[in-house]
Length: 261
Ligand code: ARG
Image 1 (tube, rainbow, N blue to C red):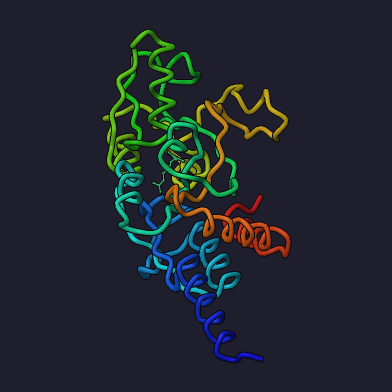
Image 2 (cartoon, rainbow, N blue to C red; image 1 turned 120 degrees about the vertical axis):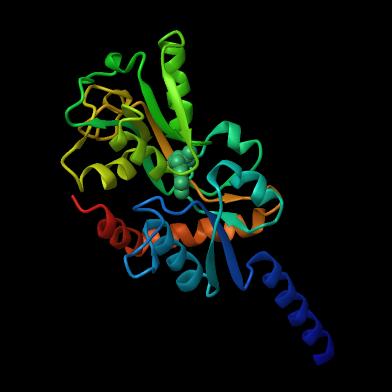
């Protein structure tokens, strides 16, 4: 019956909740990376990551969120310098990054793929030898290009761009003859035009249990939301929210909005 101590307890609880889940979640992201984060023609931010953020933060956790445009190449140091609370940027979970950040549970599967001009003479992975290929700086696409370069004993000319659209533009202009990048983002670019196509061939996906995409796959990757390494409680709350939206069908609804058959 001591109401004074009850009040103290409630206040402490509120303060703890406030620090674990911020009232506005600031999200670092490299934009545009369509269909994950990009602006519509009317200038509205949209995309798979944006809708997933809305579902997790607004619907599940009852807080607001805001995307903060950030260079992908410096996005991890930027997170660790407290420029935002988390990263949602179609970011692949890998060991190297896991030394600097903690990831949520995986929320999307992706593959590194190669696109070329439709009139290109490149029609297999081996044909890439000696060619200029475009990648976005700091990405797993850049990593896959480095792998390929060592497979070709150094015979690959990797050109890095700050944003993926720079690499896409370079492909159209003929400054590079291929772009190595995440499959659905390559598809978002290539499917809109008839002068760009995927390089075909059996890739790593064909050897896995997962249903293989109909083009060459250099890697299989999973996206995660990145947190600072001292943010375990918030990360857990986000993982619970992610599980909840998978459970209640929200995730599938968002998925089919961007990736319908
Ligand atoms: N999945 C790739 C990676 O993690 C590319 C991500 C690029 N994301 C972006 N929003 N530009 O390296």
